[in-house]
Image (cartoon, rainbow, N blue to C red; front, side):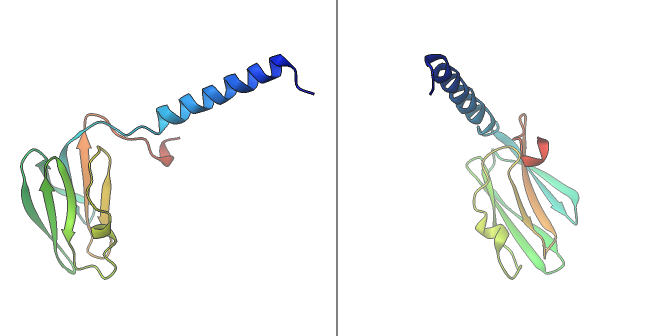
Length: 120
């Protein structure tokens, strides 16, 4: 049924698919700052090299943003379901956590941005 050349073509296609998957699936570069947005407007850009706690005010109350060891997270938020808190630590450029009910979001920024599904 299959000949030797068919197996070589199939093997080459598998290798090409694996290489493409590894190239597209890699993470973006290191982030250097965190952008804090309220109501979609950038309010402050904080460096990730300094450990600190920042508080952003939204319509439901205060959102605590923690920066520690070059990463950031939403530490506390008054939103009912806590999705942005459950997002955990953001480490790579392009990572985002959004607290929709409180209209606060953070995004890591750096030299390289990660590709997402909308970029293809």
